[in-house]
Length: 145
Image (cartoon, rainbow, N blue to C red; front, side):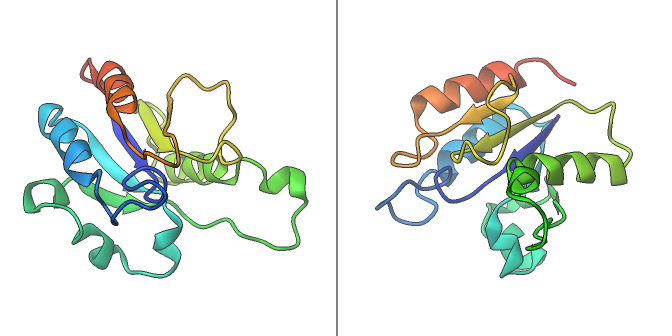
């Protein structure tokens, strides 16, 4: 199982200290040792993979396996830019020949993915990864895949 991870609005909500919800996510990951993390956050445009991976606890760092490519062409239509993070996830999956892998995404911005996908955990941008979002993540990660 791959967990595609956004930072802002997920690992911290508006007005919260940076990464205040990271311990909650790491707790979930420790309970599901077969799950791996791929970063979708816009932070990947400003920081290196090693720098971002270093934000996680040592045991979780080894399971942060990559970052999605950035699709940010200013000449594309607004319709194409809609759900751009979803397109980046699909491109990552295609490039890595990972079509057989199940995945979930943790996200707060509903413009980044189609709303009807059952494998998206929508986080409240004010609270970030709260108890309700944690429950859904645990449900989706419940079986090994």
